[in-house]
Image 1 (cartoon, helix red, strand yellow):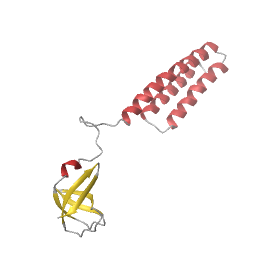
Image 2 (image 1 turned 90 degrees about the vertical axis):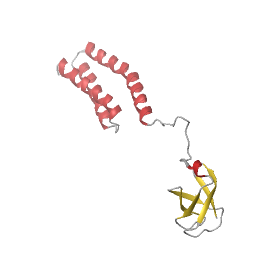
Image 3 (image 1 turned 60 degrees about the vertical axis):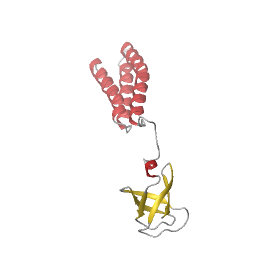
Image 4 (image 1 turned 120 degrees about the vertical axis):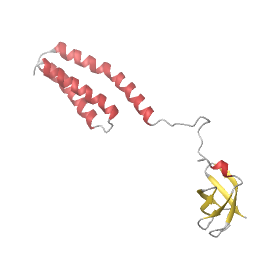
Length: 150
């Protein structure tokens, strides 16, 4: 193989490895790694020690760059975006405290109620509550809404 073909194989391999950051799935990255390793091997086989050494050193120096880019890409993909006032797991149910509504399903002791124009999963205080019964929200903890019949 000529110098040009070896370098083209090497560059395509590096591009494939870096494309793995954007297209996770490992197949492109594995193929790219094999191309890079193959180009280094072919350079040494062709008796081009200088080219082989350059490709090997460049490969080793690109590993930290790949790790940094991969870390940045994955941290952006999986970043938790919190609201300005802070993360809240309550789902906005704290505004329902003291509101009245109607049960959509029987509460055994949990079910669904229509409160303030929203369908909400609710819990009774342990008692069974029939469907279409008027209820009042007496407690909200996180996404748990506790009601009692009126």
